[in-house]
Amino acid sequence: MTASDGSSHGIFIDLSLPRAYVVAAAAEGAQEWGFDELQGSGLTNWPPCPLHPKNHPLDAVALGGSAVWACPSENTVIAEIGALA
Image 1 (cartoon, rainbow, N blue to C red):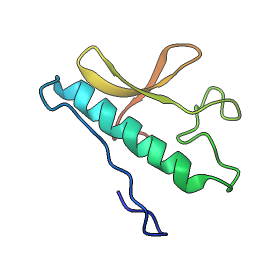
Image 2 (cartoon, one colour):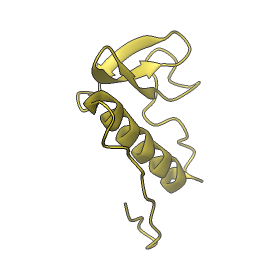
Image 3 (cartoon, rainbow, N blue to C red):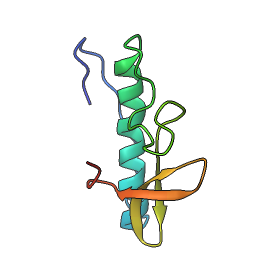
């Protein structure tokens, strides 16, 4: 991924893992890149947890064969990755 300033960020993904793990790893890598891009903007929790929007971002995890965004505080699934509104 390439930032507006020309810098780039790579993501290593082990394609031998099950699909849910691959998707979660890609989302986590994009999330880390987003954190770097948003530095200084005041937005540090992308995507924000709808249960705790001022406290933390959601975690990208593989769970039960699906890649999902989950609240790390309550271990609650919020949405499948790609379906977050």
